[in-house]
Amino acid sequence: MSAPAIIVAAPQSGSGKTVVTLGLIRALANRGLVVGSFKTGPDYIDPAFHKRASGRPCRNLDSWAMRLDTLAGLLADTGDGADIVIGEGVMGLFDGAPDGSGSTADLAALLGLPVLFVVDARRMAQSVAPLIEGFLRFRSDVEIDAVVLNATGSDRHRQTLLRACDDRFSTPVLGCLPRAGDLALPSRHLGLVQAVEHPDLEAFIEAAAAIVTAHLDLDRLLRLARRPTLDILAPGAVRPWPALGQRIAVASDAAFAFTYPAVLEGWHRQGATLHPFSPLADEAPDEAADAVYLPGGYPELHAAKLSGNRRFVEGLRAAAARGAFVFGECGGYMVLGRSLVDRAGDTHAMADLLPVETSFAAPQLHLGYRKLRLTETSPLGRKNLPWRGHEFHYACEIERAGPALFAAEDAAGTIFGPIGCSMGNVAGSFVHLIDRHPPFG
Image 1 (cartoon, rainbow, N blue to C red):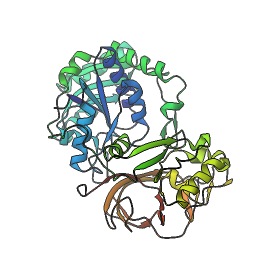
Image 2: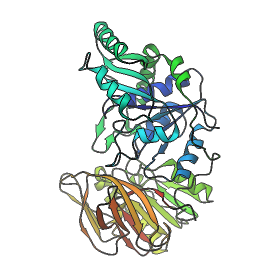
Image 3: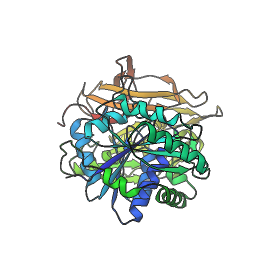
Image 4: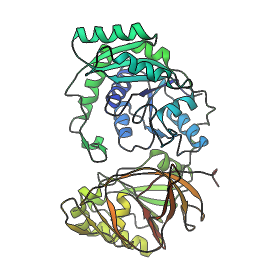
């Protein structure tokens, strides 16, 4: 049986739900509770902050991209041994794919979980009430069971907000969080600056916890949380990807940080051993590896260093030459190509394992869910196997030759045509894979 849970959501991005989530996780952990957490939708960055706050791995739950069995298993893993689970939503409560599927609201309805609604009230007074009331009434299968008024000002401002809410609806306000200019997380082009780069993350999380503890009714929050209605699998059953090999070298550092724990855990469960290495430290993949995985990250910020790290580059080429399956996603895909143009317009030689050239010189947003089919059989699966994934990058291809890896379309069914590249035992694309769509095997 999974632990009781609650999902933190908001009307829109920038409302403060990440800081509130981190504060709640740590505040409850400081009470002696074991706190699990999950992040809604495709996001590599926020889960690392959750892990620092709770001391436990944070899983992503994606009702658009994941099979039901995958969702159920990840929920079981998240709640295993926990007293409570805090989930964090994505964007606004009802935002997801173009038809609204994959939203935080969809996940809450599927799992039967209550929503804690965080509203940035800094530029509102009585108008906060109709905004909240609209969200309360929008979908009858989504239960907003409590509200947090964030970034409030004076005592008079708080009393005005509370009175407006009390006059319009019965949903409880758990508290008003005061404005705290020092509780802002820095961002860059792909979202928050990574947790490992935050100069004093522990102090930040403790400060968030102190504010949450002082201003929110945590006892009431614990009473509101409830167990999911979805029948869940036993912990330890999730395998969203087939193992790329039996001995997998995994690039892991500030340039290659975008990995889903569920994928790595799933490889372990299939009997594979994982061998991390750091391209930024000029480490080569394990010489005995039969697969090499280059996840996404920020190679465009480290292009000159990566280009000059000959041990890394030659080790990657040696792995490909001996027949290891070499796979790159997004940033990893860029590094497998011939060259990468950085923001300043300087061109840096890459591994030259795929006939691809990429550029970050004129950033252009590519964002959205992707439906995919493999063009050829590979360690990723048989030909035509359907996958679901996500793109989020500002770099672009300026040249690509060779066979494509996937046939692709977006969540609305718009055909993208062939994407990515596959040359023998080397393959990659800009898409972050999330889950296969048929049952395993």
